[in-house]
Image (cartoon, rainbow over all chains, first blue to last red; front, side, top):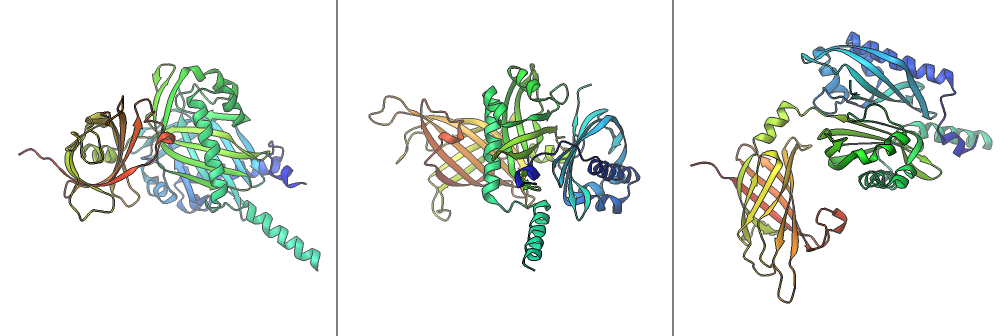
Length: 137
Length: 298
């Protein structure tokens, strides 16, 4: 395989890789719902960033974990997540979702678009960025 | 043995390529920034061809003002509906992830409308850039409207008022001031500037009061920082038919305990037909150090 070919965007043809990406994301969602700090940390990079319309600005791992107790969150993915392998070690996972719950007592936006950027580190897929944008009703 | 060594070296390089680089390669980061800025500029001037060239064909944009995720054609079709200006607030962060992919993020102040509806004013922007055929292009763009925190709202509201300043040329903070000013930070980000030297002084023609905008944010060291810009008009100098436009860019820090401000102002002078809002047109800055005390009611 040439370098150029290796670096070009793969079009989600590697079912096993995509399954691994989805498994990691689903595990992180579950850990978030369970407020499982250790698993959350293990499935995010140290320089992870979370951006949502309901947080007070971009959140680091520590910010996010510190506010887990203020969260009442459940997410239902609408349709199937789209996973694109940007490079062999970088995946972009996007989906529309319905959120239910509150943050700091305030309702979460009901309909959102979520982006997860995952990278492969030490053979394991971990999340580097999580970003949520409110969609119009 | 030699082939094994080469293989090991190749494996190490391959693994290293998958590890996220932490903004170590300034040259690559400059290229990423240049491409991203060119795309922003293309959007602002609604240049369809440039927009197409600077995005991948499978590009997706997600914003709070679009009706949903938009592909390239949808974005281009709605360009006339988008009246948009973006001012980046703070630093742009570029992380090189894997090979030939970069994550570019920043906070921005957005001004404008989409289909006549005002767009979010304070946003976090993510651009996922990919290098294709030797050129950096955008693969993904996402905007999230940020909540204006109660703490930040309170912090910025506290700055509102008028400050009496002393202004000195940069590097002469111990010397006597060359002018004094009244700098007013008003509601709605209104910034007003009146200077004691408006009647003209050595090296400066007379000029008017300045008006503009200010913005506040939390500095990395926890301080409250104020950035702002005012514009004014200068009178014609001897032999000139027309005067000019002056632009002052303020970068100040607020001391809440003493109710003081301190920092710098950069002065730019342009001909009357110049564009003072185009950063590229600014040159020959004169820098001043500013200290000021809030004017309280007595």
